[in-house]
Amino acid sequence: TTLFRSVAIALSGGVDSVFLVYMAKKYAKSVKAYFVKSVFQPEFEKKDAEKICRQLGVDLKILNVDVLSNKLVTDNPVNRCYYCKQGVFGTILEAAKNDGMTVILDGTNASDDADDRPGMKALQEMKVLSPLRMCGYVKSEIRKQSKEVGLFVYNKPSYACLATRIPTGTEIDEEKIKQVETAETFLFDLGFSDFRVRWMDNKAKIQMPESQLQALMEKREVVLEELSKIFDEVLLDLRTR
Image (tube, rainbow, N blue to C red; front, side):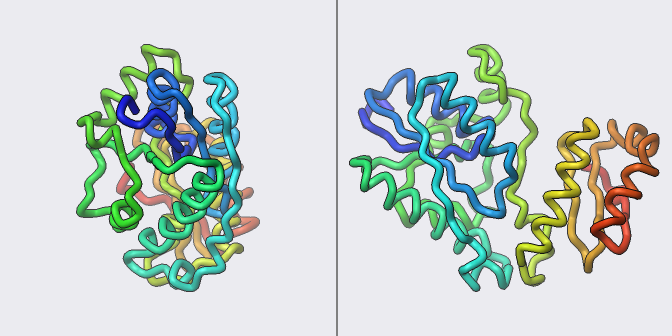
């Protein structure tokens, strides 16, 4: 950010991009954040992005993207993330250019495995810069420094987009995504964290940290009752997160 005085930042609401916004606000002359709202992003991510920008005094623009309009995304191939990132960051690039911003940053860190992330290929092709990765920041250090400077997301669990809950090769549609989001929101509201609800042939497969399994069993009946309203079956994956 010291090399580029004006920067546009793709803000997801997660700990990495929030820390990047904080650092950019500290060192850059001009910072603008962009949050892309799609069916793949749960509402709490948008709220966190709005909250941090209010706290830091950073201008935030919400962009709406219809990710389900791209068949290359909805067909859900192995490299689905590549096509999705093209659409998402293409929208950010266009909006930033209209705002007079030519340098686009994202929160990819040094812990992220480039070989296993087709979406990162799309970012490289679009010349999106990842300062945290370039400077060697790993996740643990980002969390540590975020806590030290008082960023409320410092201990927020990593959260992959809702499309990752649908098995590769299974068509993605709004109904499946809404099923998953409704189930995960319910579990969040019960106090659970860092879990996933996977969609499997209209069955819900819950992946939960071992430390929370006892609490889940204590609330088994209410969880089963609620999730059975939207899924044919509710399953627990014993290969815990």
